[in-house]
Length: 94
Image 1: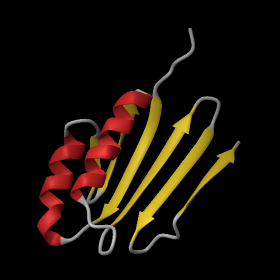
Image 2: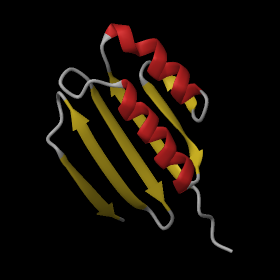
Image 3: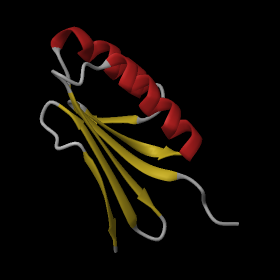
Image 4: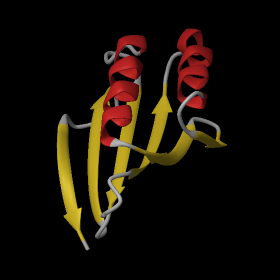
């Protein structure tokens, strides 16, 4: 049976008032790599739940969140939204 987990990377730049909330939320699901960077293997369902919760915490007029997804066989799906991002998604196949 194929592995259905996604290797996800979430990088964020949020207002000071929201940093602790976003950090605490992501710590519940992913590993803290460095300031504002989390990664880990999660199911698609869990990742969807995490992104929904993060989206409820951030202010897209001031904050920026990137989610990078790596799925076997090496498909990288990138989502960008918020202050610094062009509102688009892209898929890179390797």
